[in-house]
Image (cartoon, rainbow, N blue to C red; front, side, top):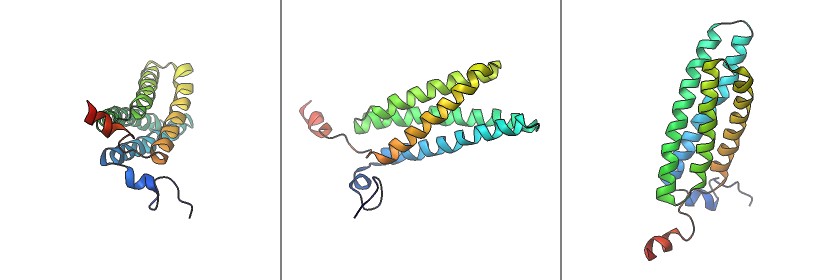
Length: 147
């Protein structure tokens, strides 16, 4: 039987710890929030000025979820001994922060391409956290016991 990693019958679903599920939930909310941003920008660019207000509010929500994701990624690093979610999240959040301030400053030459790259990076991170098991890294128990 073929199962997708993280599916009900897979080994990954059984190995993922609560901290990993929390990271998956936050990354999922983050991805949903960031997916709305181009829509709001498009509404504004098509002549509805309320779209800019929604885009600005969305930027605040996306950035806030990103910072929450950093905290959860630190917990995953400490509890599960997996650093890759923290490193990937840090890169995405750094790009989001630069993009946020570029938008506030009106630097669309940076805001638009960085926005596209940020959405793409977050989608890749979303896929990674759902495909990979987020349990205690193999050998981490032995390392903790030997220390």
